[in-house]
Length: 274
Image (cartoon, rainbow, N blue to C red; front, side, top):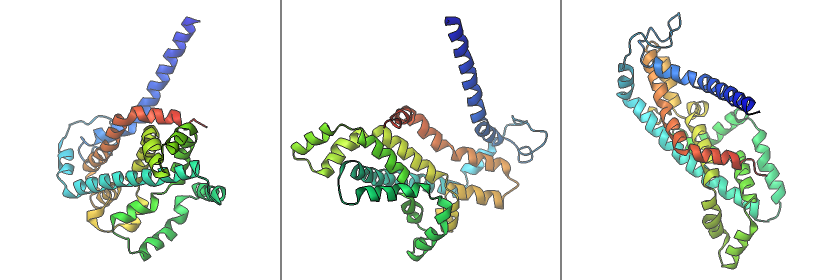
């Protein structure tokens, strides 16, 4: 039996290694393509490693003020979006999990129903709304429309439903109000869940392309995906620089994952609570 278990462990490790290699292959190719000459990136036959290693592509893209502006604006907007998303969705989740009020179930059904509406289906109407509100070409048009998320509310609410009522009752006996209970009891216990929701919001903002393209025309507010798209259109021959910029654009997300990976795993486990 022990020999069989050893074989199984070896097989699982081999499968995990294969899946890891397949998952990381596109990223590794983009990173290495950033070191290639422009003609070598899409040359045939395919070469994984560059013939001649060039650091110039990375130095040139880092020397482009537009790239640095797009990275900083996108990173700042993503952090703001994630923070507001946590505040709004956590507060709403607490209300639906712990408070009793008229039409609560009806409102919760209404909120959950929005999860089944594709984002593309409301793009035009959303654009009309923000246009009439004068929000085009502002950071607000990128942040505010997507802050409230039914999926994130549902996820946080499920966590709050599993917090013992005794903690809340003890705080009420001590004279704490609902706001104090939320900020002093629920929020400190929600860190693993907040990491999952925050990173999900961050990634949604960072990777967005269609909405920024529709609402932002000011180059100073270009998001990183807009910048890479415009670079591809205007400087199509400089594929090495494009690959270098694409690799660097993934760096903040990778760093965040490495920092919070322990809490991400904890949050995934928590997501199984009923």
